[in-house]
Image (cartoon, rainbow, N blue to C red; front, side, top):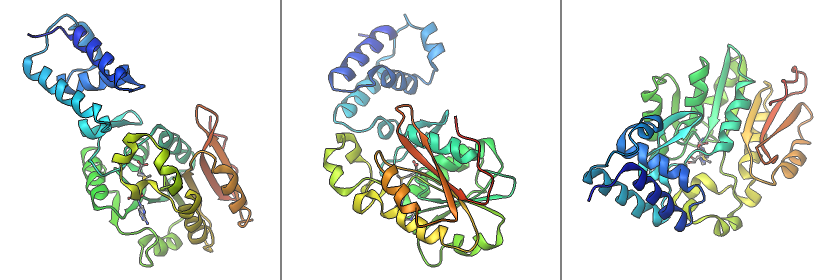
Length: 293
Ligand SMILES: C[S@@+](CC[C@H](N)C(=O)[O-])C[C@H]1O[C@@H](n2cnc3c(N)ncnc32)[C@H](O)[C@@H]1O
């Protein structure tokens, strides 16, 4: 039997909520817009119309997968970041709202000649969002081949193929940023590095375990990527700027680490829960950026 859209929506919300999804209504909208190809406004005008059997079967299949705990982004093969719909492949980190804060802080540091280097480009969410508002020189690194392929797809889809992607460790001795940072004018390092302490992994939501460990686990206390970034990037003779996302409760240890770098000052940027989630570092002699709102 075919069912009207509003019944399908109500059933989806109920089923998602009863399987423990806290964002059941938002997820139901994502699923409905995905299977119908229509946006919310269009769907509301067709609320009493029926969904075809094929579309209902597709809905049921998505729901079945979601109930196993698989993240919705992997089931749909796409996710929303900074207002843009981007492709997300299985095995690549799903971009989070905190990373949108990183993007807006990084934007305040970009000048005409800024060259941006990213550690851990993942799906390409950060360069894609930055390139949508400004003309940027950008090089991104990732050790994951899947991530590089995913990022290439997103950047091509948004006409940003000039952004260069490197399938290599950011810390490789031959990494291009090491040479080019001396030639370029204004350098900005950005990263949402793996920052989860290994011992915290078992306490995370089941769905996080679908994501690659390499994208999540950040060594002892979750700080090893920051330590390497600071020693390798801030100790160079040419000054640079850096904007990184950090884990909950990492602001104290990171501020302490930064005391070793007297030529740099830093600011913290908080999320909606007032937790510092983005760290911006800049040379003490440079003009202090406007506080991020
Ligand atoms: C937390 S994810 C961030 C992905 C993306 N920037 C985002 O915010 O959605 C970290 C990424 O760093 C990559 N990565 C881990 N170690 C790396 C290394 N040494 N060099 C470059 N990338 C690395 C992982 O493969 C993963 O894609």
